[in-house]
Image (cartoon, rainbow, N blue to C red; front, side, top):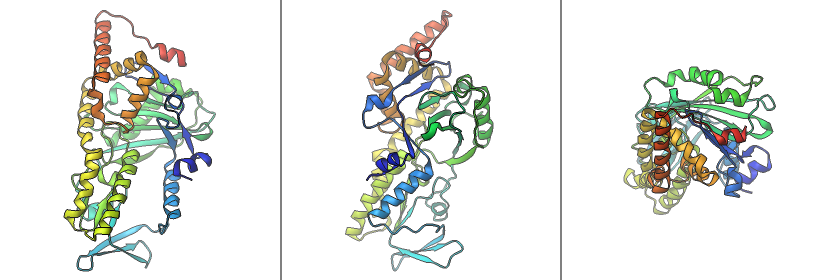
Length: 371
């Protein structure tokens, strides 16, 4: 049984059926993504602890030696022997390894101490679960773009048992929205954003906010002698969305395939290990620069989000699914420049500008339909 099947069977994940977006001007669209994509939904809502457990147990089933409750304190490389010695906190146990893989999250204490990661995390996000049955949210996943915090955003995602995950992403680019202000924006949106307050109602019960660091845009170095850096530790987080699990899992697969080749060749020096860095950069890392450019555009011209939402309204669910492919990392961000996207968004942009110049009132037929 695969990770996906295991999570669904155990009711630890929720497969999105209806998802959408709300623009700064209040335009919105809710589509039925699962029906459009068949067996491959646009999003699957999974608590991180359940996902990590599923991955670890899957690795154990195929032969990995899983050692739980073993937080790493230190790792030292014996260059002559070509072996790492890994020591554990509050424990006399040590482990020996030919290659060290740093997959210790955005703060990446280990990769930082080794000198591979040289900058601190540059952003942050929040998370808080809303108790099932206490809210009015009817969709499975909606992204809310508040003009004041662009290029950041917030979202609601449904989990099993009608539980919701409310999250807020601070994305660099807006000097008025800083990482240290995360709690303010998290609470402000819950209390003041009209679309979010309408979706939740006035009886929702929400847990205390939790925060996590983000390292966006990819690190310049993710390898060295006998060592690789993977996932959030290597900055494999999209600067436009703040999402990293897709790229982390893809980067992990690239690392595993590369290590299989390295073990066959018996070469683990920095030059050989650099091949891994080049592979994940080619697969998705170079696209991060386009995400950064789009971030600046969204901050400077929020009307672009209105135009994109209007384009989704006009084109319907198939267009929404294609948009979701781009936002979730399945398809490169540069795809937004292709005519099938850029032309229709430009058309809607001009239409919105004309309407605003002449004082025409904007409305959201799709939003009214799905209320």
